[in-house]
Length: 177
Image 1 (tube, rainbow, N blue to C red):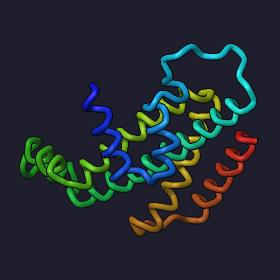
Image 2: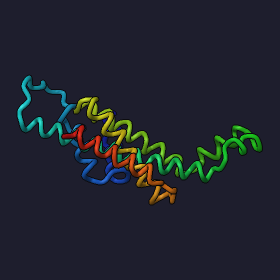
Image 3: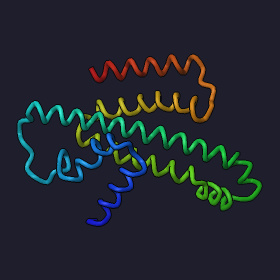
Image 4: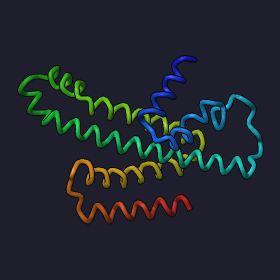
């Protein structure tokens, strides 16, 4: 475990997150600050610790959204490259479908990004309330997916989806305020 955490930290910092998200969400709890600290926790939270907790919570929410959107885009691109799974299964069999899917680098990177999103969710839930973290992460991911689908996958996102995304954004603003 002592060798695993530094390797994981190097992987996350160098490849998967921008530095700001990595510092706020990953590095500081591994060094003993925040919710992962083994020392005694204060009974009454001070104003500065409250602000740090809010900063950690929102940085983790942004890490969830960032990693989830990247994972969704990479998984969608991988499955479009694999093709129609049903037709492929009928033509060459299940083992070939699994091999073609697992052999796609976009699929593997997408699954890795989804794993990062999951662990970021665990950090966020350790710092903030589930009534804030879950809806904020889900709704901001919805907005991020609409934008990323338009930009990276060249999907047609119609007016109704943009209206829904803006209503979701308004809901997140009400939730955060």
